[in-house]
Amino acid sequence: MGTGNILNYWRGGLRDVPDEVWHHPSLEALLLPDNALTRLPARIGTLTSLHTLDLGHNQLTELPSQLGALTALSRFLYVHDNRLTALPYSLGRLKQLTYLNVGENRLTALPDSLGRLAALVELRAQHNHLSSLPASLGGLSALRELWLRGNRLTSLPAAFGRLGALRELELRENRFTAVPAALRGLPRLRRLDLRSNRLRGLPPWMADLPRLEKLDLRWNEVTVPEPLLRRLETRGCVVLR
Image (cartoon, rainbow, N blue to C red; front, side):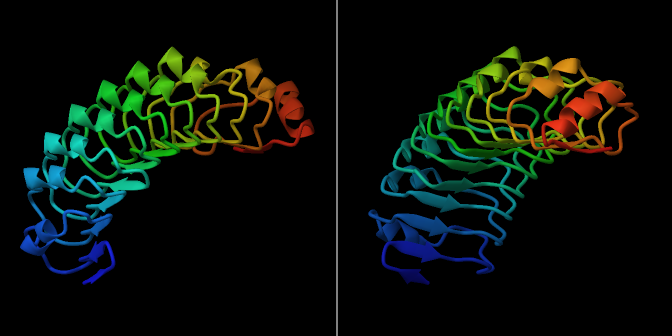
């Protein structure tokens, strides 16, 4: 089930990582999605040539700290659709990683160390139990997309104002009563999804977001003042309400 330096066990009906994996120390991509894995051995840390690791759609309840040894991971780390309640602090060592998906788990917090992932372009943490986010995430200077749908967030750290590369932000189905002030002035934000929150109003500075193209406010009890709506639409922003 391998080609070159790739091993693909997609939908293999596996309950354990196959022994064959450990016979390939130079493996570059390991794909194990849609199985029934309940455990990831600590030996995963020996596969130091991996650039891609897909563990999505399994039954994992924890990840070993040895994941942090995979410093060559530069493309994808997918651990979505598992039963994780926490992430290892050691993930902060994956400084070349560009795509991280930890969505559809049972996470109540993200480790501060994720703010060290300087190359991260996309972070997906949707459908967890997050009530807050670490301020360190404001250090993700390359981050373009952040997906946080279906959590319990009521605010964002002020440090999020440093996310200068952020283009798409999904905050749908959280508990915001106001647009987070941390978003004020983000230079590249194009799409902001605030559907199904508890918004009561919009701040005037929304019209000053220089690149905003789409603002989705549906399923909130919010009234957009006409002057603000005109300013947004005049500068080309589509407002859905």
